[in-house]
Image (cartoon, rainbow, N blue to C red; front, side, top):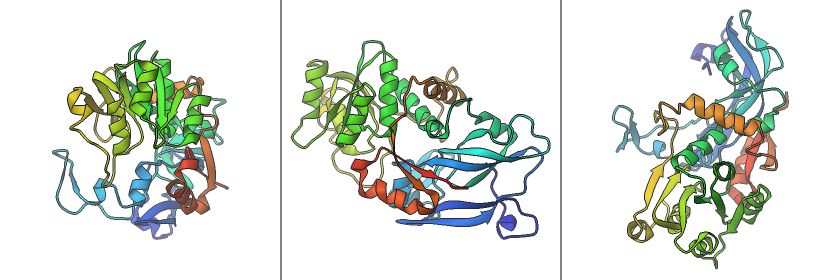
Amino acid sequence: MRQPSPSVGAGTAVAGPPCRRLLITGPGTVELIAEHLPPLGDHDVYVRTVVSGISHGTEIAWLHDDAAALHRRWDTGRRFYRDGPGRDFPVAPGYESIGRVAQVGTKVTAVTIGDLIAVDAPHADGHLLTETAATAGLLPGGVGPERAVFFILARVALGGVHDAALSVGDSVVVVGLGTVGLLAAQMARHAGATVIGVDRYPRRAAAAEALGVNAVVAEADIDVAATVRDRVGAAGADAAIEASGSYTGLHEAIRCLRVGGRVATVASYHGEQPGLRLGEEYHRNRITLISSMTVNGCPQRGHPAWTLDRLNTTARKLVTDGVVRTEGLITHRVPFDRAADAYALITDTPQDTIKVVLTYDH
């Protein structure tokens, strides 16, 4: 996405379409900021957002001041965090938007007004794209915005399934049945694995069952690892995909595995958390722990055969073809004007949410 220059944002005579952006301006504070996008160029495309998805892990970490990048300095060249001040607020969160083409530049030929476009950009009611970016995000016919809003997280889930190195007949535990976990569970089944989902919230376990995935509700009196072994055999599962973003969830994923099992983590972990005890099953059962990351300068482990473009294309096709189902995963639709309420839903009543999206009334 092209970024507006300070002069345009300041309201000079040359200005493009008006735009409101969502910013996290401080811990717990969400604001909508009005500005103007740059003027439409000959090869540009202006889209007005129809729906955007909130990332329940990443965005809530920014909102709660838990993201590592806010507290330590990332050394880009040597790729590690160093002591020292991190980045500061405001933060522009979001990366799952679907927009409808409203204007095109005079030399644009690949898209037309009315086309739907998937946009990897922060929450805003409008975006200015190059023709190349708009073409890459063009939705296939018959695919609506609320289905396409899952494209990017489907890519995340697919990367996790690849990193878990599943084979036909393997047993895999998916811990955390939020959006990514539910997408990954379906993909793991498609890959030929026996899948058991685990979540502490009954609503999410029920969603897994509705998608054909056996699920365990991780209640206080349930030993998850014992329950998993009752279903897959006493040795434990071959692999786990950890999608909860909690150390407790990661620990349970480890506990569920056989000797030499592997855990692929697709969640990010934020803040100070209890629950992970590496001196127990992780140590005794020689578990392999794999971080699944397909962006931020990390090529997929299958690179160069599997590029980011190939992962994106494959994930989109799985959703488009209905191999990976998304119906029923959106639990709340909140108008963009009330974005703060959407974040409050996720924070205050996580047991009731799977996917919360922002809707835009133009």
